[in-house]
Length: 113
Image (cartoon, rainbow, N blue to C red; front, side):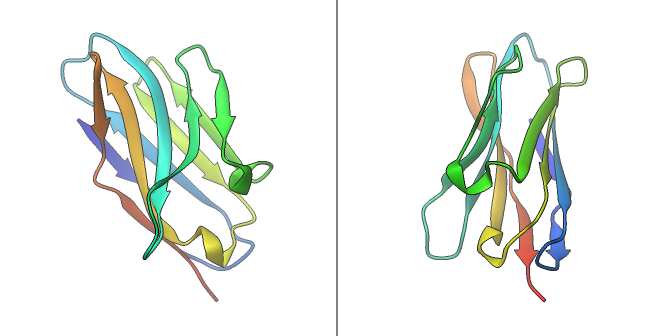
């Protein structure tokens, strides 16, 4: 239902753009977002966006990350700039589809020199 892409290896200070597409029989697509889980840590919120475009960011990404969505294409993107080593994690796409909560498989982001 959710397919994420765009992870990879980037140097500190660099940028990456994550994309996630929802597919299948979609009658309603509500809040979409990104979460991440670093090694040895719990999964945490990165950013979420409502269908109307309202956004919320974790403090760690404010000013550096931008979440956006395309309701016509059922996609959500996360533009990440000024990446830091502590941003290294598996990033998961999340969405409320037809009243249920769905997770993508995750895409690894590694920030290292």
